[in-house]
Image (tube, rainbow, N blue to C red; front, side, top):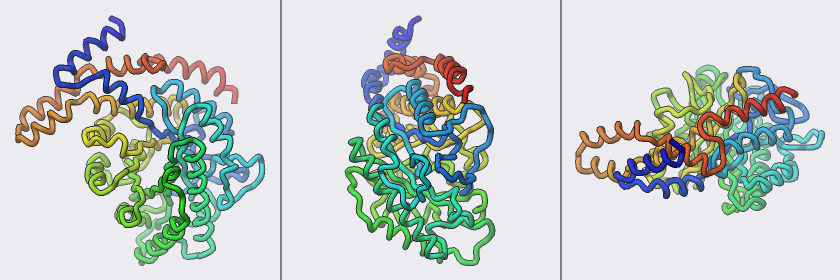
Length: 417
């Protein structure tokens, strides 16, 4: 049976429950995912003076073919994007600036150092997002940046973040779609602190200085990101969830939730509805933690489906900015992007094919028997047939056939690096 025939049969199944599959497919086309550039080079970046990865994060594996410069990274991203349905965004870190061999300190980075990225984004119809890089740097060696007791070091990182917001604003102006500029810092202590308050006071003061410099919200959206712990900050993190949640609410900034940045029994999916009640917009970094914030490639697991369901059932596709954040150097990096991003889109399709309004009605009526029965039955509805049709319609490989293209790219390009 052909893809189209399978699609028509599946469409009939969903139509019985009032799900307009054609409408879903059209709507899905307009949902962008912000794909993180750092999967392609193991969060190394292209600074002239290379620094060892730090900040409580780690990349494991040594699969051949890692991008060694921006042109290679853009080529790899193009390959991945050709295998992923829809039009999306690319998320950059400051360490991906191109300075033509000149040593440019991070607090001196300007829009001109990202002109090649903007040109490439225009050619490919992409939006760009941005992050200051407050790790892998001598001024972050002791694990403190914006909360550092040394005022000179704090000022360095404050200026870096101010410049980063200007770069994000530049992206938004040039590309006609606002950039999300997200601040995450590694600050914390390995052992139990004797003073939790003072570093947080300094972080608040630093953020106040950063955001005192105005950018145009039509072009740049500010976000802050929390974490529960990292390597070297196991006992205390300055920028906790409670800190940033309160800061974002009080200062009208976006709170970014990373799926790996919470205690093992917490789930981001359970936080989304509460956040949307009080925030106009919310940002996500979707990852897959295994025992800790290990940033494994996103798979189509229960939590990913639940995240997508919470976004869709709350009619928040235009309010939740979905970004990815994983880095696996043990497998082909282009394949990692493709697997993770396709899975995020699959989860959204699964959620959009669920009769959410009827299930809400059952809950309001107290009909928990039918609610549970239908939620379980829809897990085996033929959403795969809709996914195959969507991929074909969007001109990307269907099912696992994309893997052959990745293998060919590895033989022709990656293996020669």
